Image (tube, rainbow, N blue to C red):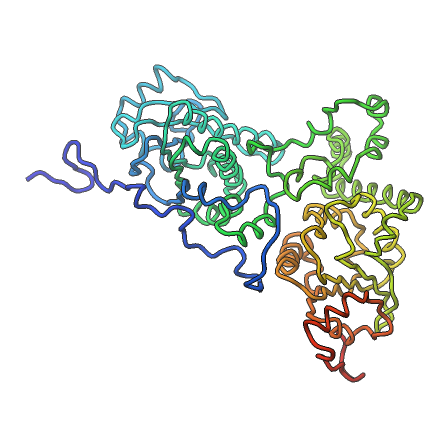
Length: 517
């Protein structure tokens, strides 16, 4: 009797074929949404601009799937291999592909293709596979000393693969990760580049492709489930949350990683100081407002200020002298802070002061100075953010020398009042450590869904050291537990709004025996 088990299938038989039409598309994939951990107001509309907006038409073209790539009934599959297609470095699917495709595949590779360089992609027939084509690509070896080179090479892998998809008029393709742990590439770092490149490709050429399957192993699945929503959000709320969790370097319009060193050295009109290599003068001429005033997402990581790095040659020189990267970064941050403080003390900032969005009031019950920030008075989309930063330093510098408290009045703010998220991250990274150390409480009055989201993100990923110092209060009177009414100067529109939503007296201040917040 002829055996028909897994090892002895009848000639021409196809077992366990996976029909991609029966797989769940990304727009219908049931995963926990990113915003479920935020206590939101269900009826509140979210106004936010992101680099990767929610697009159901693109989500219907994406499938996330774990399994044997050779079982998918797609026109093309991607084979992640090495330069000479031999057995020295293989991905888990490599052996299966060669085995099921038959000896003709290896013969074509040896006789016609011969070699595939790192970052390149080559097309062959699928032979005995379900797929008509196989696209072979070689991912980079990862070395933390040459991260930018590895990122550029990995981007090139995916870009070349997708280019072959277009040129060959392939409608359905399964992408296996080109970034291999066997070559030391971190799974999550590689997933960002893979998914981002596909997103940008579909934005431009989505009409030419029907389905792209992200095929991965069980070990890779968790990373892809976590990162896919950042670039392919499935709802408006997930889009808003994703915008806060995106990495600083989201690449250019094609998804290609931005290399900060190139941004420093390529200038349309070099200044005399930069031609002399006078680094101090070059940094003084940086237009921070131009960097900050753009959207949260379009300029992230494009300038060395965003990367918190200085001239690469200077950093290398310091490293040779024995300084660690952390020590060098701290030194550069300190230098930037001191230069900005010098400007804050001397420049004319009367136009920012006239906004009355940041000012010093009296003290709390423990004698700590209180600083008020009025969100509604801050024109976040039109103000000169560089001058706003300088004014903040001028107001805060005398206060932060000892314990202090900040009250943020979020009352009646709109999207136009919200500064870009990357601006907040950069400013926080720039500030002297005494700002974090001496801050004892940060009160947010009349919080909204957006403020809760932004606060959760900021204190989770950027400012974890102040997370336990942030308090959201739904009314001004809750402040009276730690700040006496006659010690805090609150604008009339805030108190009017407070009475409107909470009533004239909704909170009974504790007696003196009770502890303050």
